[in-house]
Each structure stands twice: as structure tokens, then as C-alpha cells.
Length: 159
Image 1 (cartoon, rainbow, N blue to C red):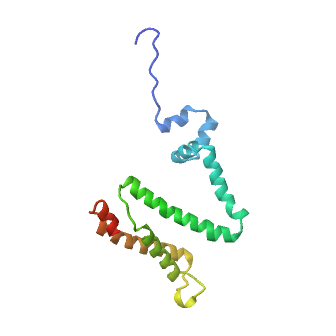
Image 2: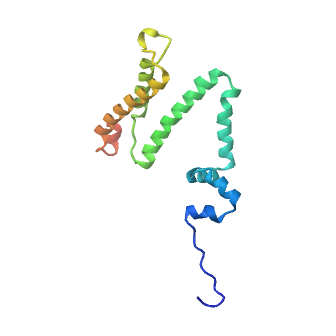
Image 3: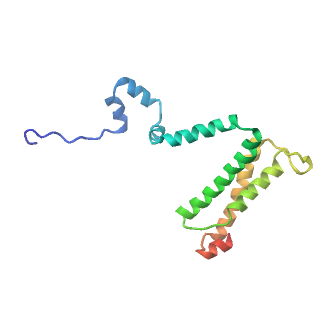
């Protein structure tokens, strides 16, 4: 090394970075997993506002808005997100999202508690939800098995 030159900076491994920081910072960092620290450090202020608004939402509006409008908007948003995910990352356009969601909803209506006792099995919700997801997943796997080798307009027609 030439005179006056400094040694190149070397990035420390994650387990040694805790040792290189101040003791109180090391304790704070050690309490959180690495992924959680990175996730929280990447949040922007508007994302924090949205999360706080979603947490406060059920406490400031009527139960009708919470359950009828908010829950339905959330469910339909998840279905739209699945279509965006499939179309954006998979490059496929599928019309089966609503079919799979309808199958899961129908399974919840039949297996869960409802006001029409003669058509429902009155299972507890914690048992109904996994069963409905399983039934919908099996049906979705059947649709996927039929449409996995198709392309373009044929995928749309099969689904």
C-alpha cells in the first residue's frame, strides 16, 4: 500500500454489524428481525397514514359501513389484486378469479352459521375459513390444470 493511501472500506457481515455499533443501538436492533427492520425503514409517511387509517376505520364508522362496504371492498380488492398479479407477473389473463372467489363464498355460506339454519352446517368460523380456502384451492387447481398449457385468447376462453 502506498504512503498516504487508506485501506478500502469493507462491509461487515450482519452478525458483526451489531458489535460495531453502540451498545444501546445493538440491543435495539437485536430485538427486531432483519426483515422487519428493513420493512419499517422503507415505509413512507403516506403508507403509515394509510395503515393508521385502516386500523382506526372500524372504530369511527358504523358497523354497517365496516362490514357491508369495507369488507366487500377489501374482498373485491383482493380479487382484483390476484388478477393484477396473474396478468402482470404471469402474463396471463384469467377470468376465473370470480369463480374461485364464488366457490369459497358458497362454501362459507354452506359450512358456516347463517340465519337460514336449514341450509347451513353452523360450523365455527375458525374451521369454516380454512375449509373454504381448501375447497377453493382444489377447484382453482382443477382450472389451472386445464388452462396451464394454453396461451393468449385460449387461456381467456378456458378460464
